[in-house]
Length: 186
Image 1 (cartoon, rainbow, N blue to C red):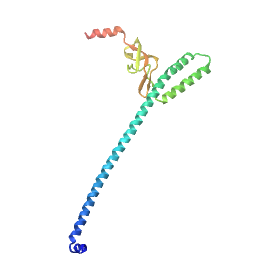
Image 2: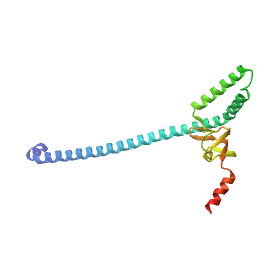
Image 3: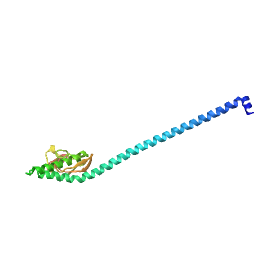
Image 4: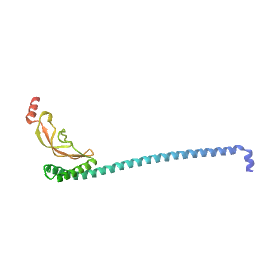
């Protein structure tokens, strides 16, 4: 009997088919929205992970650089001692010993420079209070003012960071000239 009713009323079947289509379309739209939401969440998570990886790598490099700087700072007195040994042994009749010390000093310097150590500019460079420590002054001509004239202890930078400042002697204008300049201003 149900078949007879369906055959007599074809609109009932069409309505059921339209309802089914609408529910399927609605379900497809819901699934598309869910896929878009999950894709967005995935992309955000991936970006967060990439940022985490970059930040961690930078932190590890910073920690490594700090450890290297501390080690290099501890090795600088050894480098100073080798330099003093070379100065003292320059007139030594034992050239073999002098050559050996020179070789050790050169190898140590090369290794430290490969790791990022650079000497602070010394004699002849302008005095820079950020990297030089002036411990003595001498009178100089007008052109040689605020210039490093002697380096008593070499300073070093490690990857553009000051590890040890240079102890230097600078040139300054004589006190009489400074007083004369001050008198001219009045």
